[in-house]
Length: 529
Image 1 (cartoon, one colour):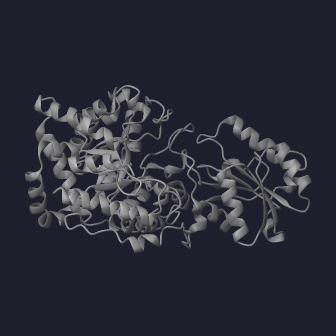
Image 2 (spheres, rainbow, N blue to C red):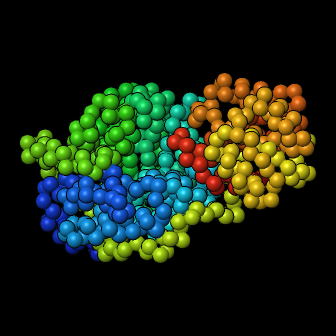
Image 3 (cartoon, one colour):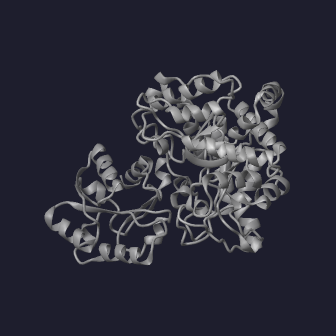
């Protein structure tokens, strides 16, 4: 796998930006500089614009808003334009609008924009040019709506079969190939006008605990730490990534007994000193149970900044921002946190704004954004490469021989596949039952002349009992010959299911939060037809 060309270093921004940065840094009060280092959740008023709490937080100086959710793209553009007006009218730097855009703007907004493949689909394709194209188009759509910052790509290298959280959100390939695909996406995002964020430093692809639920203790060895998990982050820094997100993991064998996000060693020594990173450091969401089980949002935010983060990702309601700012300001005045560190963080955040043109901000084009209100298909010619097929001998042309199918499944993925199959001309019926031996056999009796397409959505780390259920379903008497293909939402290659008695498409379509990308659904139809 070969990498794409590198971009110019950040020095290209310096000469034109220094005056703008110096002016804002000189004008901001201590309270405003502290607020610049905070990320909060936006609120939406009855008019679809920032509510009173969000306006107050912005006017106080909060520097980053997380994405609004479940909103048409044109409405989000209008919301973001209002955010710009509020901050500029207050004499403040424009607020950064951030979001998890791992499969496009629809990942945050809901049904909007192009549905792109998850990183695991890009990993299956093993094509850095494809990775770049996906990121570039994602960035261009996001900027048209008013986003500035995406919390992607995931540079985690999955090295455990029991991964509980990453799944389709990671590339699922070696450290070397993760580096190539991830840096291609970093360049695509940033060439398209977004700040990219390599996450989750220093990698939690070997974690057995979901950080949304608890604090993982990662027992990796020193060699694995250096050659596997750190390698993609070194590559990210070489690719001039604008930001790095630090994970909530402990690494006791490396001497890290607190969450990495709250560790001075991880932030200040590993990232700043050892790797020479000069961009923005942001903590992972501090409302995740890995941290919030122990610390309040205010305390966690203070600890993150003391550890060396530039942005405390409080991800709290905007109305809670004032209390957090007050606590941190008191810590600065009491000497617990250095004002010089706050100044340095604010400077890095001002520089990040320059990188995306916010020193001369333009309003989002609401008319252009309206074209993204309806979700659209991803039509890249390499789409079929983003899923994995294992074809059972003698079952090579079943979709060509018949046009009548029963899609069996009680998930959103099953419904999406049935709809897409119908749109490409197949005669489909959705049977909304859990696929198992009994339901497959029953469906074969209920719908004579039709072939069955069972759709399985196992947990992120497919449990042995789930795989056994799959095997029982696909090898039951009378079932095998009636199954056209079995679809499995999985980050595993289809060859991992070769013993299950059916043609299998492994499609990385649904993440651990239940968000489905249409790109994988259509890619599955591509390889089957």
